[in-house]
Image 1: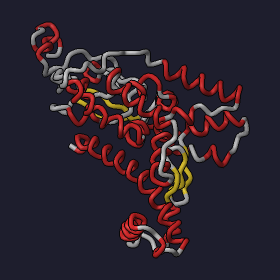
Image 2 (image 1 turned 90 degrees about the horizontal axis):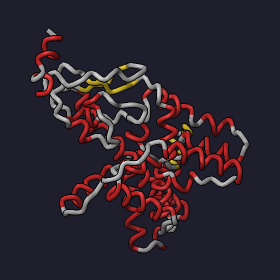
Image 3 (image 1 turned 90 degrees about the vertical axis):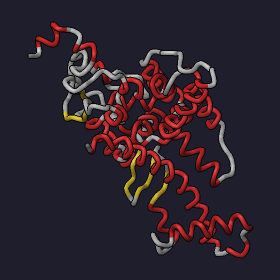
Image 4 (image 1 turned 180 degrees about the vertical axis):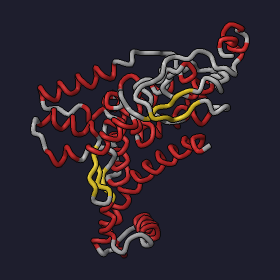
Amino acid sequence: MVANHLNKLRWLSLTTVFLLLVFIPFASIYQNYQAAHGYDLLNSSEKFLFDVMQLLTDPLVTDASELDALKGTTWSANIFNWKVSDPLAIVSQLATTKNPNLPFILTALVPVVISVLLGRVFCGWVCPASFLYELNTNLALLVNKLGVPVHRWHLDRRFKYYILVGCLLLALLFSVNVLAAIYPPLIVGREIYYAIALDGFSSTAIFFLITMVFDTLISRRGFCRYLCPGGALYSLLGRYRLLRIQRNVHTCNDCNRCNSICEFELHPMQDEFGQECNNCTACVSICPTDALYLTIKSSDGNRQGPGHQGRQFRSTPLIASDCL
């Protein structure tokens, strides 16, 4: 089934976005070298970068200035003359400046429409921080095998909504854009650029590393689930999404693999998805009986009980007889 490969496609999407964030600052440096016309004045490492970028880009563009077709980060970017921004960037700008900028607001239109229709897909399919957090899950498993207890804490998912509202109030009252300092997708894109183009990092890199440690030792995907203001906004936008994951109770065998693989600790096996689900399809891909699938529906279905192929259902004669 095609659906079983969607998680691989998602990883391809996450990897592509992350590699583009790495490529963009290198492209900027290469453009500067080209504009200076001073190849002979470059040191050996700079010449190596120039030669590699020339090798990579010559088949694609005739002039280095054409690389401007890709600029920015997932916070706000220019993609082949299409300006697109994170909805959180719009909200934070409005709160900080109190000055609506219609052209800038319109750059978030497509992400907003996608989120309303498909849900919190930015978090699962685009976010460069999610790319690192999911890789970090493997580190947590290794740490756990070494005898260090991990992922013990469960917090209130509503915290992230309080943080979103609190940061917006600070922006409204004091014109301080706190969101730009604590939003992981923005931090990752910004720090990649700083590291490559400016040979350094800002203090927000330390904040992001703290979130990685928090996810490793304290709570699995804890920042995304409990603290991320962007996750809060996308969850609200996707509350009544049309694309949802559903369970076919007739083919479910209650193996619990879907619950185990869910990074957000939702319960697909109990038909519990909700607005936190980012339609990552990891549960769909891992299901051995193809009991999970994507469907067009405006709300999650009711809890259906144990899977009909599972031991609990088969060992309960009253339930089994009801379905005959």
